[in-house]
Length: 265
Image (tube, one colour):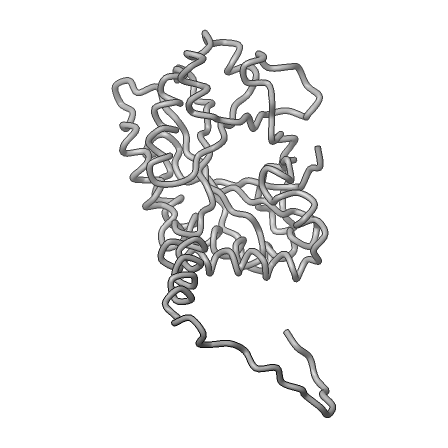
């Protein structure tokens, strides 16, 4: 497996300069907490999350959000509310969030709540990953294997890549949270190692320069603003081509002579 460096944050607000500095250090994937499973510190997320998502996106990162599943007992917000706050806290950056990860670490949360939240998130955004620790999984009976299989969630786990195995039904991690550090200005962030193929497409992205990676991600973001995305754009081009009467539009060969100077981009 080829890996790529990532980081995830919760309540600290970052600047574009700080995002650029982290990109220069080799980080390529960025995760932002969008919902804690309750309302504690939600106002802080509402203030900082859109800013962080924007500056890291503009710096060239693959940006995702994560939301905590909760026990669902008295005093906790509903699964539907978790999704509503997740969307609201991303603000204007919600369309640019690539996917939402389910964070599974609140004590007393059963697997069915994780799967319920994943299922609901999947109606509004890609949801492919559950973040959790071995201590959480070992403390609970396993989920219904058919339901877990239907959710198709991959594991992003706490601890280094080599630490103890998870049960076989989930032990195929695509990410590891390996530590925590701070920026020169004292802002905390978690350090992650991710499967490059899973997030960035593997060797294709790795072969590009930093500037080319930024431009590629910017192009993909622009395509997302087209109705129907890239598939919609292709369909409209094909429809326009089909509407051209037979025998029209045949190109005429042209010979160009002379010299040219300058850059073509």
